[in-house]
Image (cartoon, rainbow, N blue to C red):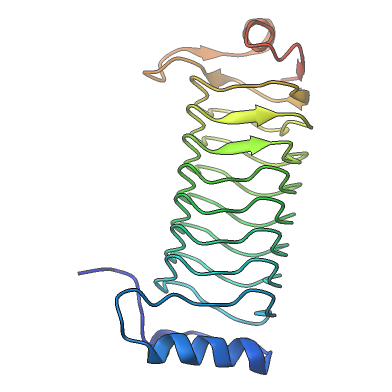
Length: 220
């Protein structure tokens, strides 16, 4: 039995916008297995959608500033160009979600599952990604300034083309691509497949250089 919720009675707080509320009501009323929430271009501010099964939801170009998605299922959801500043995705499942061009400054992704998510050109400045799973994610040209990826898992990720995050302490980064990456980072980082080899300081600096990220500076 799924741990995610799918009934209107499970909704913690409705959005302030009547149009977004209507979209949710129509989704709740459709009991078919293929039903998905069509919320593109809508304003969901004020909503708490935590623990809902929003797999495949369409939130492209939507206003989701400050919306709570804690422990929700957003697998395969489309959040392209969505406004996500300050949104809370803690413990949420965003596997294979499309988030290209989204603005998620200071958003919370603590312990979120972001497997194979597309975050190219996304703004994640100041975002909290501690303990998040980003295996096979693409973050090319993503703005990660001041983002916190402490203890995050970034195996086989694509990073680069813009500023790297500040905190990578304890992150797992085996198999990553860093073309064009730059900026200052804080280690140490686990760099082998078994996550047993921890590098910091000059050793980590040398590792980044060997990965083609010669413009990444290790500062701690």
